[in-house]
Every structure is written in C-alpha cells, then in structure tokens.
Image (cartoon, rainbow, N blue to C red; front, side):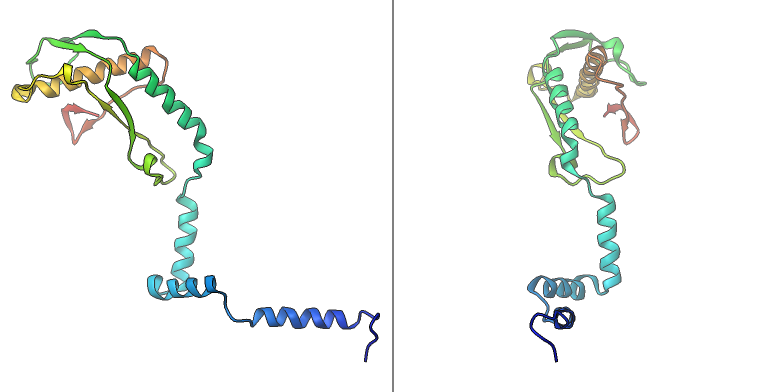
Length: 185
C-alpha cells in the first residue's frame, strides 16, 4: 500500500476520524439537550423556535452602562431637590382641593424596581421603573380622609416633575393609573 512518508494515507485517516466523530456517542450536554427537548418542548422545531425568539427579545445588559449612569444622575437630582411650598392650585382633576398645599421635602429614597433591576427586560420596548419614597414628614395620619393623601401625592409628583424639567433631565409626563386622574404615575 503506502509508504510512511507518502502522505497518501493521511486523507483517508482524516475521513475515518471525521466519520467516527459523526457517529460517536453523544456528550453529556447533548444528552441533556435531547432530554429537555423531549420533556419540555415535545418537538425539536418548537425548541428551535423558542431559542430563536429568546435571541430576538433578550437584552445585552453590558451595553446599558450609559443608562445606569443616567439613572445614578437622576437619583442624585431627585435627592437634591430643595424644600419648598407647593400650592394646591397645581392640583389637576375634577375634585375640589381638600388641602391648602404641600410642604415639599426631598424624597427619602429613590429605587430602581421592576424588570430592569431583575434583569428581565424584553426588547423592543425597554422601560425602567423607579420608586420614589415620599417622606413621612409630608403626611399626616388622617390623610386618608377626603382624598388628602392622593392630593398630596399629586402635588409631590408635580414638584418632582418641575424640578426635573428645570434640571434639563428631559421630558416629564404623567399617565393616570387605571384612568383615575387622582392617581398620576
């Protein structure tokens, strides 16, 4: 057949190794993938579709560093809002004012909550939820009467929106929670 230095036997050996690798026993990871497909997805096509969909909607959090820097700046801005008096004339809605105004004090806490914090954002619409704590000094234990709490909350948010607009943070707008104008979010 062939000589040791000929090299003619090498392509045949490469073909044999490739064939052996093709028909080799599956690895542990391959077996686990097959088991998952069989038990969870009931079909390889469905698994492929789910993996493709997951690739389309998942977010690369390493690219969101500028957003995190912006959130830190936003937090610092919110915590630095000076104390002031917010008149009841800033209230929106059909109900008459049950309070004369609000002595605004900077928020006691600003926290990122929701899907951004849990790293469960989905594309294409990315949103970040922020919880702002209203100081206890702004409230009275009987503010649940005559919607005073809701009106104080509305004045507190209007002062925050005013401060953010003045700081040039960007456009600030409110939506009504479940269509209730007394509950801006």
